[in-house]
Length: 227
View (cartoon, rainbow, N blue to C red):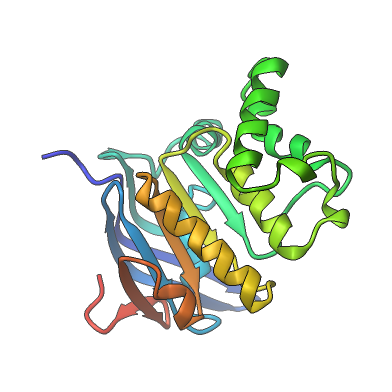
């Protein structure tokens, strides 16, 4: 039996605020299989974004282990973690995180620039992805010339640029109107049906309802029996 795509084992995360230590995560366990679509719900301060950052190898746990395809990556050097992130994990954020001076095409190409992909191949890949999210006609527009829904589509195309195994979406509909939000959720469902593994962090029950499984967090732990 193959190892889970991602495992967190007894993960804690502590932050120091002055003289006070704040526990953002309190011994969290999580196993994520390939092809899964998991939503993590919880109020602000529940630890869900911290969990997503650790799952995405953007941050390290204070204690516990992070395993990627069965390999313990907790103590890897930052450069190696960045390499794993760049090749295998795509991120979609509430605030889009697009470079305002670059066009939609150039924003989608950016992860491939960092990987040294030749310019012609980058352009072809970015064009295909923008077509896939319905934005071919907007490829030369900068983020400021796009609607919120269009910007999030560009962000999703960028997340797919390196053909990652895992897509992590942090409140991807939080800054969108209801119509654009539903379009983005439909796009995420299509990606999962095509075989992508997704984790969606949200406080919105409608957004969470598109996932195959929903876990709830409170005070740095899973509740309601979730693990």
